[in-house]
Amino acid sequence: MQHGVQIGDVLPESRHKVTQDQIDRYAEASGDRNPLHIDPDFAKETMFGRTIAHGLLSLAFLSQAMTAWDWKGWAFGGGLDVAFLGPVYPGDEVVVRGKVTALEIGENGVIAVCEVACTVEDRTVIAGTARRRLETA
Amino acid sequence: MAAYTSFTELKVGQVFPDPAARFDVTEASVDAYLGATEDSAEIYRKKDGPRPAPPTLAAVYMLDALSHFRNPPGGIHTKQSFVFHQPAYVGDTLSTQARILETYVKKGRNYVVMEIVTHNQKKALVTTGVITRIWGKEA
Image 1: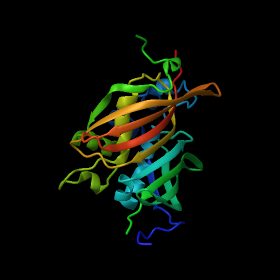
Image 2: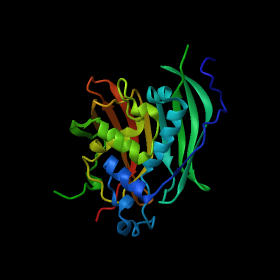
Image 3: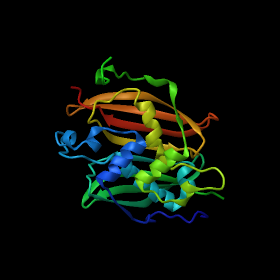
Image 4: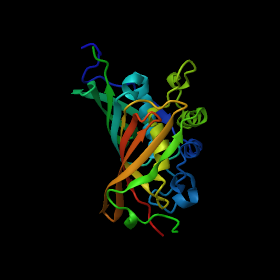
């Protein structure tokens, strides 16, 4: 095993405090100006009662964790499959965690499959899997 | 023309937009994304040689394709998958098309499942993905 990754390995935990200012900046950078994210008057009439962060902003935090782990294995043949399970509100701190649960042999070599989750306090807001391609001999 | 696309207008198998949405990966677009996501990774600030964009910049360039249909305000993302075949680099021009895989109603909410495919200017596959959204309430 030359890649050095084993089932049970844990990704370094990361934490991200989300603010309305950051949500606004993400809306500008992404072009996603859904008023649910940036218009408090609109958002208070929705089931959330206030603005929420873009799910894809939290997904970017997950991508940062995978980049820190191994950029090449993430950017060349990596991937993810997640569900958005709950909202992230301005002021929340998103915690990103991951753990290797399987090593699979695919077309392009060995893939490390990680169970990943983003949580806010005791709520899971994103859950699913992320895949990193491992260097092969 | 209606301001927003009605859920009933979405048809399984529809491919859009045609031609594909084009997105120029620029220093500015990558810098804005890195700034908004507070991503400090050095690899995305590379000065010597091609500068890669974060893989999840896909969330930005896929939006250009998906905005072909105007989702009423308040719609939300429920699931997302991506495969990152190779990075997009500053200077690349990406082409993205989407295809509607499924539409369904669950608990009174309208769902649409779409596949997205992005190639670079060399026709090489950059990103594929599947997105599930709740369609916003139509007024």
